[in-house]
Amino acid sequence: MSGPNPATVRRKSQSSLRERIARSRLPSAIRDAGTLGSGALLSQAILFLAAPLFLRLYEPADFGLYSFTYSTIALIATIVTWKTERLIVVVQAKATAIRLMVALLLIALGGTLVLFVLLLLTERLAGMLPIQPALDLRRLMWPAPVSMLVLVAMTATRLYSIRVAKFRDAAVAQAIRAVVFVAGIIGTAVIWQGMHGHGAIVMLSWQIAADACALAVQLRANRRVMRLMVLRPRVRQSLVILARHKKTVSALALSELIRSANQQLPLATVTLAFGAVPAGWYSLATAFVSAPGSVVALAVGDVVNQRLSRLHAGGRPIAHLVLRTVIGMAAVGLVPFAAISLLAPALLPVLLGHKWSDASRTVSIIAIASYLWFVTEPATNVPLIIGAKRYIILWHALRMANWISFGIAALAGLTTYTGWLWLTVAGSSLIYALESALGFFIARSADRRRGQPGVSGAVPVAVDASVR
Image (cartoon, rainbow, N blue to C red; front, side, top):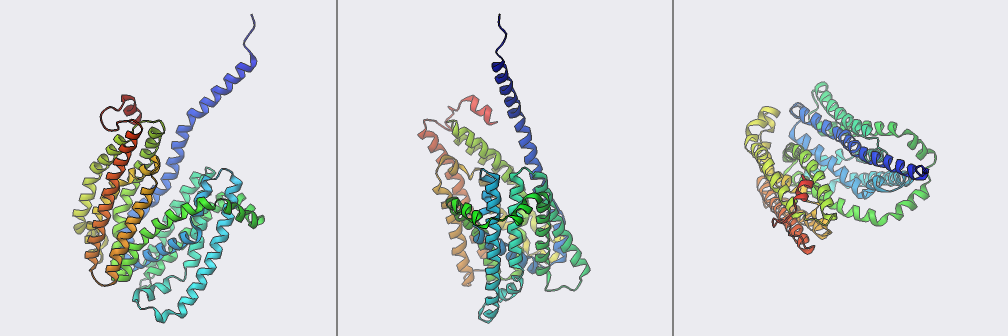
């Protein structure tokens, strides 16, 4: 009687090995996600815990001008690079990712030179600027070329670290960025007691230094690749590879430009229409209300989107999970956001000092729209999952119309700061509510088109078990 075929035994052994590797990937993925997420969590914790101290040392106007200037620099970086760095993670070959980094840095360097020339021209035309805050921002924008270049390089190297699974380095860089910024602005305020009127430029300078430190960590982590890029840049090949991905870059650019514009428009409106002090209140309110909730909402969103994609790809209904997610987020967020809205007038003066007491009304009002964003965010990818992509652009466009229409009214002097705040929050709340409701209805419509009842109660028990 012959023994087992050696080829068969070898194939079974290899199959068993592949199965063991596949089983081990899930804990590895969870560990890597936890390592990467720890950097974001730690940096947010550092900024949140240090906020009561450094906000006592700086005026609301300083914080408002700093926030507006740095967000403007980030918007300029998006316009210049078209978010090409997003491709570094998704392209198949590592060599292609390196060439894209070279092309990206060349584009950023060119944009830096163009921005510097524009600043020189603006300096000559400064007498024609009628809005007083613009005169203050002109001085703050001089570091913008360097800041933009450092920001683009830091983001690109961070994404490359993530691509090559150097998650710890990416997390460390993010934490160091927060530490340098907080330590720098607090130390400067303590040492330089008479910096009245210079707080915004101090904060911006330390933000650039913090970005540079994070970049240094990434450069050290990827020093072999950086040395290769310097010694053999292959500029023409890098630009050719970038041109091959122009369709993807164009799609990314459209969505990112709209998103960046929607983030910048409200702060720009407040700064130019009402002044630097209300801009400081608005910046504080968005950071104070949105930052803690975004950590939870985005984490839940990652899990929900994975499960929605898995169910939809398997031909199973998803409407019940969308509805359950929205209701669950509404229940979880109701008490915290209500507490923020009601307790802000009493707590802000105690935590941050009386000069920030007027920001409490802004916090209370923005908490309403932030709550609806918190409820809606985990299910925002439903149109993308089922292929109804037009709704993604629709919501971005509606938000932009909301900011632009009420922004024009504010710049024309037709409303006060509080009135503008209530109008924009009402518009944003309505859009979030419609987005949440329509997400459920298009999911149910997709279920019905595929012959699935969705939330009618005929959902198989096995689906519920897998979702849980």
